[in-house]
Image (cartoon, rainbow, N blue to C red; front, side):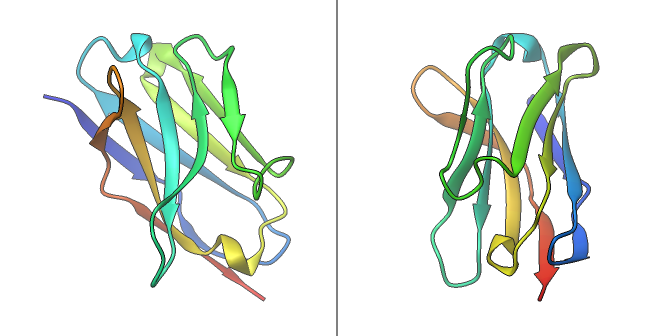
Length: 117
């Protein structure tokens, strides 16, 4: 059974940084593309970043490009999202997800990120 558990969220002032982690269980974790998404109150869930199995293919939403960095450590079954220069509009629940053949199939429970002005 696949389980994804996010951590690292919290309250931070604008301009600050946070690093989110997503620990995955179930094998073979290292062969799957992983992604981060977020959902702000009253808004639809949106894509943030994705990383393929070996870390060579990485994509970001335009809104976070240059500020966020996605990475993974396959030995630890963990994917990370380093978030710098945070803005109030980054406030959301952040989810990690594992991609199957065509869509993201497994999701974590989410971690709250709140950025104060």
